[in-house]
Image 1 (tube, rainbow, N blue to C red):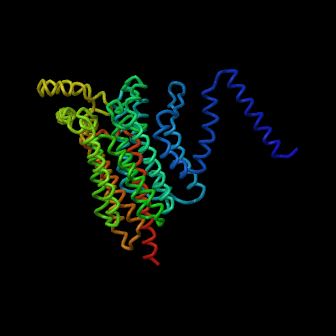
Image 2: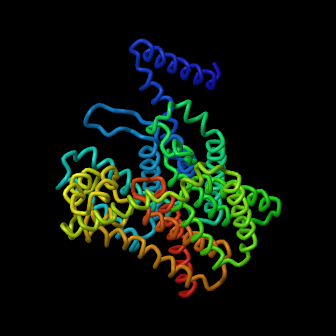
Image 3: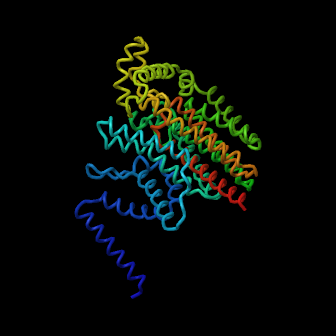
Length: 475
């Protein structure tokens, strides 16, 4: 018998036996997890770079749905944990058996590690639900350190970085089309889900949300996709490719507008100002895109009725008043425990704010009664971890930016791709930090993941350029 035919027959018999056991003992979920999970793990371990790119593209859709619940006491297996942990494990194994070393840890790695240590200590010393809180902390913060390490060592060439940019371009396009569809099908979508806020999120307010249920994260991911597309346009050689990318920019800009989120609009404007400041060749594309967006916004405003969603979002002052109350309460709480704060999570804030709401007047207390965290990441960090945590958190971005400045000074010979990569990173970082003034961004791990993958990519390019410059100087 042909060996190939024999092997195929054995695989068929094995699959039939496994399927029969699944039917007999009604183990459909473990069977499905085995059929899908084993090839996925094999792919992640053999191709960590492609697996990371696949995760960036698929996580917005699959991250919230692909979860394998395990017996009590064992952490659930999620799509995000499986892929990211697998990518880091594959990277370590590759370097171990190939004899190549990982790039050296820098100040950013050390600052992130200190924040992770602080968070772990906080969970073990102050949390009543140590297991679940530790997993939540890992998903929100610990995973960013792993992504930074992976990106720094995996994206080793300009071609790898272009692949990352193309993934962000396609992700931005998918989200833009989905957001446009949601905006124009708002009534039928909300009716189909019986106006359930847990299912619809901000879509219930008429704001495009994509797969996230939150308009803030949807709009910011689109801004990141927009910036990465600008990077692609700057390094592309084909006029046709540049044209279609510019068309994609238009759809992304419309999606950003339809998020109807003022913080996103502010972050988008600041990032565009940074891009045009350092790359004059892109000014024409950006000016055309901004002019088209302004015309679209004016037309949308003029044609919309008085009670439209856009007018309600732009002119309402209730959310601003609520945020100011939350800021005041957060400051009062932080003054009571200024060094180490109250501990992570929403419960310490919800419990601790009660006594302070009674001190700020009846109207303010009424506004603040239904709000959650203070919608300001820096204040929230101050409440949770005190001044120690806030300093560590801010220091991560400080050393990250300082390292990128060293990269900028090292680029004496103008490498167009690397220079544009660096400027694009500054635009992304500025948009992300601006969101922290208005949103609890740590609660949106995918946003942090995109930023730290970008930061790790830039850090890796910086370290490799510095090593090659040092080698050239010795020669």
